[in-house]
Length: 330
Length: 134
Image (cartoon, rainbow over all chains, first blue to last red; front, side):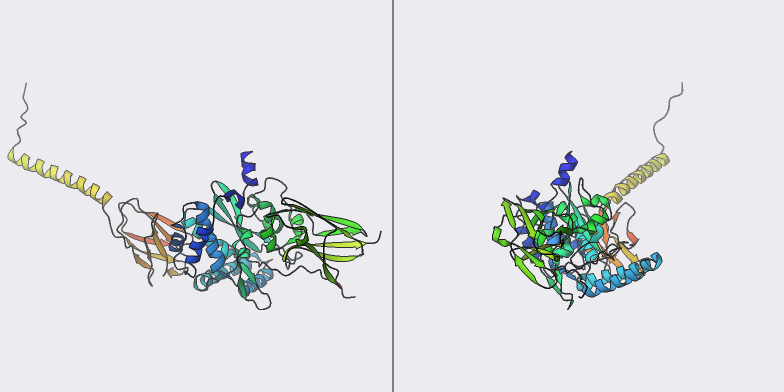
């Protein structure tokens, strides 16, 4: 039972009594440090801090704000992995070659892809005597083609603090590359730091099941693929994404879809909008009903016209999630 | 009953003195080598040969060395038995070496961390259903 409670509470709110300003300022004061000596960098980031969570925070924040995502490397790796996916020898050969290239690039240029972020966070944490692991698995974003998602495509971290494991995603927290230009933009998203494992499970599927950090309702791979798309801003605004659990809905004309969330901070009803896109027009509208009870947000929306809709949830200017709804005649 | 004579002859006296001296010398030498602080040197390599730029750190401190162009290092602080040196290089498994009485020169090969390198990107691009053109 204690074990279960441990899982349930494995999120950043456990440390609400800790102000991360000091850890963040340590990360900032070491901005631009190079990666020639990880033990020394780890020492610089942690020596002045007193708790493990602050030490880990300084390391995580430093990695998120100093390491760029390399879009070219990502594309190349994806291409090769797809090409060799049915030839394990060639895939292994490619992995070995790519691994060397990637570490060299990380050290010299401070550019990498997911595993490089997770690797660096783990290494720096380990030098500070903090238990930390790389979690390999599947990550899903709005542009992920779920029909071809047959090889693991994402890495993140699990970290043990005060005897409990927590999850974080340094890659997605670091910023967003623009696919057209490939230019990476640092934009730190704090929502991925020690995120609620239930929210994490909406778009992170670990290969090793122990890294769900969930006591029950562990999704199957199919459920994972059929889950709604959530965006980085979901981690900023939501504690939990409770309903709906599927991306796609078939309903009859005048039928309703129900949405339920737990928010990090309460909001005003006028900040909740749905953007409906039927392929021809798109318009922001208020849901048919909104109820906000402290941090519980519940919405219903009635669809009165037939069609196939992409339904995007916005909280203020932040795009949170997307669902698809096909509305047919009775 | 024959009484034993415990008086040593001069030759025996000399022998005993030498023996005691040698035992004492040995004892001092043994304790000396246990607490003796020594300069540790060594060479670090990887699968390609000597590895320049590898880090060697004394556990629990920020004291360290970096291997030179030949993969060689000389640790800046004198070390004693029981000290732990941490050998690391980005992309390779970190190894610990405990200094014992006999450690003077360390030869170590680091092995690559066999982590599979993968990566997908986050995006703010709104999801868009692919629709047939009508």
